[in-house]
Length: 413
Ligand code: LLP
Image 1: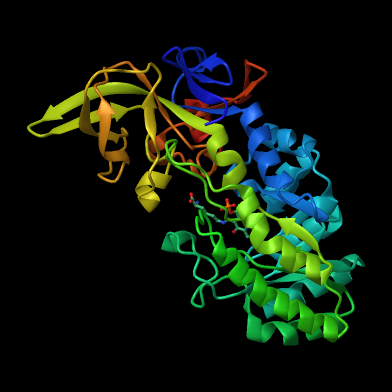
Image 2 (image 1 turned 60 degrees about the vertical axis):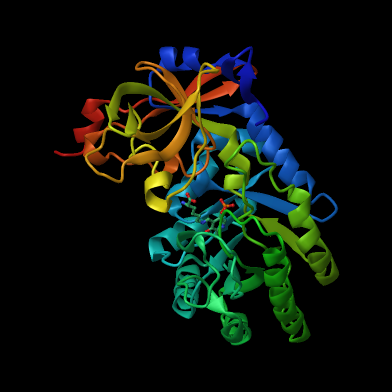
């Protein structure tokens, strides 16, 4: 991966040795590379340069305010799903006019907050929400810009837990309902329908599904235009997959652009994109130390100091995360499970993995952990959450302190 590789057999993150980072900041430790964030942002954003567009980073994938600041400097907007995420984005200095707000269950107080801050648009997911936004907007005396999140009923061919555009999913409104809803929105005094939104799923590796969805949504936009409802923003969501194995090449973002740009160009809309994983995923790693080695008849366990509370993806989705030692090994490999210290059988980071022989005390890196890593971490088993470090120009900077024992009970008064 760019900026995360071996240098003379020693793993480095933007020029800083993984071992040294583990030593200085402790483990488990999330480490991000600024250059890698810049690389992945530019690779993505650059693919859409021929169209007026906003790349709204999906804050849920990696929400540290210092990471958001890096992306803000590159011109990113933010895709948010809660007041908390809007708060983070604003704190990072992201222009409210580049913030979109999705989510099936927006509360009135969240809507009020977003409206006060003057975000670009609400991605509305139901008729009831429409009336709630109208009411809140009326109380504030401020018109709410909206888009409907439509569900194009396209199979993104990814994990069922992260497929969001299927007929049976809870997200968005159906294509059939949409025209009628836009008509209703137009009649409501405190709403201004300015966009349309869809997001069909995450970790998508088959670019043609984006086109399939975009064509369906574009047909709807044409119908809306014929009714005099001007759609200015075409929000195509996020979901472009990454390579979780460094040996496999990533799908170029230009492949995604090829699928949607011509369609949006023809409509004359501005394009909004909401990539999360694609930008942060391979810009971060989780460093962890092997605490114990345990050997059974035909089973080898590496018990490490990161658990499913620190990185939930393998146990939650059966996700594959490539694991490499901080010091390159030429020893023969052996099949092993890499497991955490949590009292659950499912606390697995890698199952039946071919790994070089590793020793107790060694540091290993769990790759592609920049997205949905720290943001999904919890305090389960009363484990303080890990620290986060950002390497910038070859210098590490602590961007989130490791939680302490006192933090665990700080709110239990
Ligand atoms: N936009 C919307 C409306 C979303 O719901 C999501 C992700 C994104 C954008 C960003 O998707 P991305 O570009 O990152 O694929 N925790 C799961 C992923 C959940 C994704 C939820 N929505 C995982 O670890 O794989």
